[in-house]
Length: 346
Length: 268
Image (cartoon, rainbow over all chains, first blue to last red):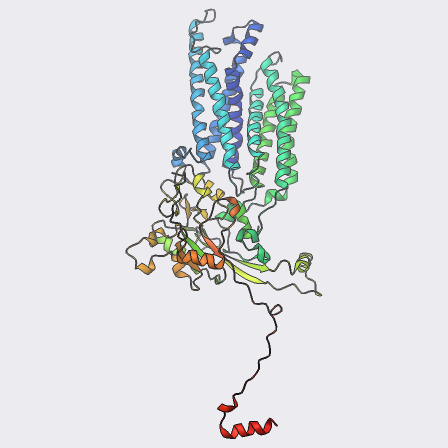
């Protein structure tokens, strides 16, 4: 399959963005972690540094999600009609993906509104004033925890639907593989972890959230690399459809194309007859594994060992991770073979 | 609506005879010609008269060589190694011309993946169509089809496919005998047949039963309606039983007198 740049951007960037939103939403939903930290350090929850990375991280995630979704419009022949794609959620994974992608913006926008209300209250109170918070804007309150849960659930559902767009296509065996959905989910989570870790402004390494993110990066890098390895082994073992089988005459003997139906390329051969990636797959897989998982994991370890090199390490880890995930996703598309190519003997 | 309608008893489709198809591409050209001006047209091409023309065709005719597999297993490995003067490469057992178009599946994957409802299967006769005014050109349907039935129009930005000439088969301004898909009307060898494959008594259904018509790649579970008729077995001189020598018979009574006498004399 031809790896279109718009779809690469869409799946990689929105995957990372929704992964970060999932982690962020989870952190808000299970607020006690943050509350315990706040109580232990004696800093009021609203003013403790954790609140900064959450804002910066989720805003960068917003940028990733929006860029990804806008890129996906670039793949459409008629982008102005994109709204129609929200209608067929009963049968179509693409439609479900669109619905969840947009629904997930609702809790995010409401949380942003809470933050703005909070900021206004803090500014009004002045540097020495005490902030009187009503229940619905407080960061540890029930509304925030519910919104956090909705953000996490929506993000998870969106990436699950994205993965199923591809996993549900039977003619493309490499996508109709059982590793595809778990790989999409864990890679989204991993990318989100990288993004949040990179946005944590904290040189002292004291904060529990930060250590959680770095540990998460290492654990998820190993898990994703293992999943991708299993996936590649699985698709390498797949047999491709033969021409004889495609035209249903394999019982008569060996079938080979004699004359092509058209002299030039057509839509099918252009879109589905992409060979380059399979030729270089071994090298590209190594590059993907190293850039996407190995280097960021090593950098996360380095951050633990040498906290002084922070934040350069986590920024490098995010950069390397994004490049590596683009290679990984490029391979996911480019390596996959479509059954229709059997008619062309390719 | 891209959820599928309840199965209809009427299943309009094509039956394509691979035995008689000569690969002349008349069906493909007639299809392009009709649909370019028909209800679902135009089918604009890019660079139509240039070096690399590119456009939508609903029908593509492949040609294949079938080499008898089991008999020439050794020959096959020789071919892979390169030409060997000692064992001449076995001649193609069969040339098969194979027109490929939409099979109007009973459970079409291309319809259910459509996010907009542009792709649909008609409840009344099972024809799979694209509503060009709703299509957003996401191409997911083309990915979902293992038969390559759908091609995107680069010029229009929407997906196009075989309509089974729905604008001909119900068209009352045409003569009754012309209410058939353009490809069927154009075929010079009558290799294409159109009819209701849901009716076991229809001419096409009987043809399928008679000639062991088959569906393409049934393992995908899309249940194609169209059927292909396999090539009839070829006569093979080596395997044919030797013809018995013909006995000549002579009815003496019917001969004229002189010849009857000659026969009697020579028979002594």
